[in-house]
Length: 287
Ligand code: GUN
Image 1 (tube, protein in one colour):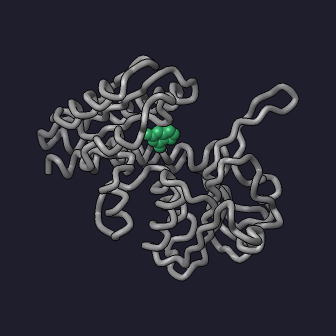
Image 2 (cartoon, rainbow, N blue to C red):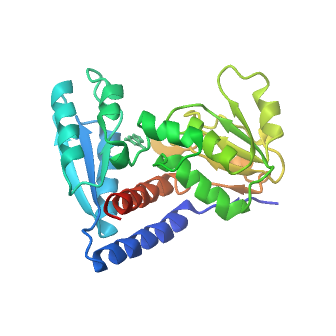
């Protein structure tokens, strides 16, 4: 048996087309096209690529992209002032401050300064709390993308045993919340977990969000399990760089029932969900 490959790229393209349709619907009703402000501080190479892709996708869906590129020596106060002005700007529906910030800046107060109604990353305490309480809010993009892929792969998740490896604020924790809301039976594993391989072997759904190349081995995976690989790790082999996930893909392929590839799995879903969140934020603001 070989696993069904969950094609995030194709799925994300469909979602982006749906977002573009929703934007057309909004503008036909006389509403402005939703605007997404992206703030990039400094010149981190990976962040520049991510931001470029976000801007391209935003414009591709017929939305307005408002880009703010600030120098690496930007002060905390200047960044907070920019966030405050974006909060007050009626043409901005979503605000994303690209992380990580340069080391001299403290990300927590910057995120806290974002209006929860415009927090399309779902990172403010208000939106984190809403998710934990099961209330509507804005949900972090990567976890949302994972849930859409799981829905496509499995449909109803009620009663399924799910293991989430990783408990980060951006990915592991919110995915665990969303799986719980979907009535899965959820275990969260982390660096202190005993017998991680044993935990993994019991999981019908395995979400790997660790950030270490090939961390989850093929013999950790239950036959037929659905594997969602959130990792994007750059490795260099024989002088050639390539991206790999947190799951040893070639080992997992003959065992799993379904698996997301890296690249082309969860990654493209993140940007598509960012666009979807921006439309949701615009809807809620303008009605
Ligand atoms: N850096 C890497 N991923 C993300 C993300 O989802 N949101 C933000 N703001 N920064 C990131």
